[in-house]
Amino acid sequence: MDLKHQYGALRAAELSEACHPVGTTEAEAISERLYGTRGSATRFETEKDDTFLLDCATQGKFVLKIAHPSERMEELDFQVALMRHLERRAPDLPVPRTLRDVDGADLPIVTTSAGERRVVRLITFMAGIPLDRTFCTAPQRERIGEILAKLRHSMADFSHPADGRAVAWDVTHLLDLSDLMSFIPKGSKRAWTVRALERFAEIKPKLDLCRRQVLHNDFNTSNLVVDHATPQFLTGVIDFGDAVRTAIAVDVSTALMNQMPKTFDHGNRGDLFDAPRDVLRGYLRHADLTDEELRLIPFLAMGRLAVRALLTCWRAEIFPENSRYILRNTEAGWAHLEWFHSISAAQISDLLTR
Image: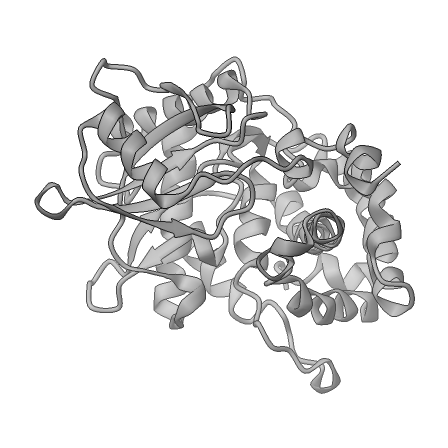
């Protein structure tokens, strides 16, 4: 049995099953037919769907998303409904708007030239540069934390029939990924990952008691669009594809983990949370965290590193042609896992409370 079929049944199909890519010419035609937009399409690198920047000259720029054929309609409807909720509840937040097609449909379906039925969305383009391509200062990181907190408050009363879906990237489900350990390189990298799962198992009962709501769940630097020339700095929060009802502490830990340094010298015993604490400082200006949540967040950040290692190493085996994109952040994470491995559970618990 090949890797795809051996593990595809255990993970979301859109993460384990290939589909036929839609080309730029076909994307332009789909957009014009559904939305009346005429422009040139440029492909974005993505994890599972076909996503394009549409430059429509006088009409402006848009993002065209053609979902993986296995993505469920109710989950895509959840994402659209959440973005519409944010548009009504917090119109000042830098979140894209989702647009209806010429017939008023939120989620039109097309049959591609490859014969696949695909769901299409058109959303507004957020001007700026992804944070993973630039830098940020301590005050700018605090701004990121402030927006994360405001998003949390704006989503607090949102619900949807599909908001309880299981998302592989939600660290809550880390222990369900243990069957992927064989894809982690043998030796120290596997030992660090195993230890992360063991420590996560110890705190999981406490996590299960934490406050929960619908949250973005993927505040990583590629999903944050910034502009150094503007006072607000953060000009866009994009990609609600991993939004889910999860623990508030999980959402914060993901944001903090993604502010850890891309290069880290384990030998100098530096603190991985130096920059993430700036995000936390901004967050706490607008939203509260309990003492228990603050003690759990460093363990959850460690857990998210393990989730990334397991999912990316597995998916790089399935899709070697896309391995460069899939593994783009994995290498930096090994040094981070090594650092967590080198300190005690008590030290981890105290990282944000001292």
